Image 1 (cartoon, rainbow, N blue to C red):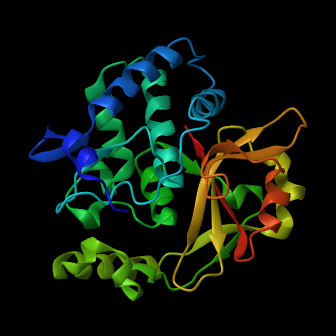
Image 2: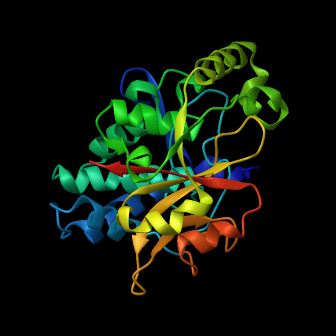
Length: 280
């Protein structure tokens, strides 16, 4: 993604936390304030309903790829005007934590976003970002933010070599740096030893009643070296079925899938199933 000079000029880069950088435009700071006002009256006791309600406030926001690949060093990027599937889920979860914990200030939002996005909650360079979503789920479960429900709703154990980033180094500008590349390879070696549970595509409809609104859905894949290709949020709609609330590469915007999740996945050739994580 190439950013125009005007966009880069508008970005404010200011210290955040202990010697970290924050990248946030004035427009996104305004969007944060508007979002806080919009969600201030949500039910603080039903986390699933809160997650879906917050997610739906983003409907229509454009899908934009690689919004975190900015600058020469890893920074905490705030972008509420262009979301990919992962940053959509991260922002929804961050705002849900704001509601749950009765927070309204920008610094709390930044802390939640950093906690969610980085290994053990700390930004420490490019390799500290949770690039592979199966690791994102596992690490955020370790932090106590969510629970991997896949095994409890019919999932089966699966393992595969995860090495897409190191074998496609040219797709990731930050991997031109040898230190970043070596650290990503080390992360991939660790992931090789970790098995995950997958609810196979053909079993999703039969187990759909076990999925709750607000659950995080991660789409598993047959693509070599990759664990997850897409993610979103489960929402039970008026037809009684689970649909996917997500930043869609089809409509290029945040939307609720027209088809129920099980049918939607049938149209994705490389899809093998899903992982399901429940915010706590």
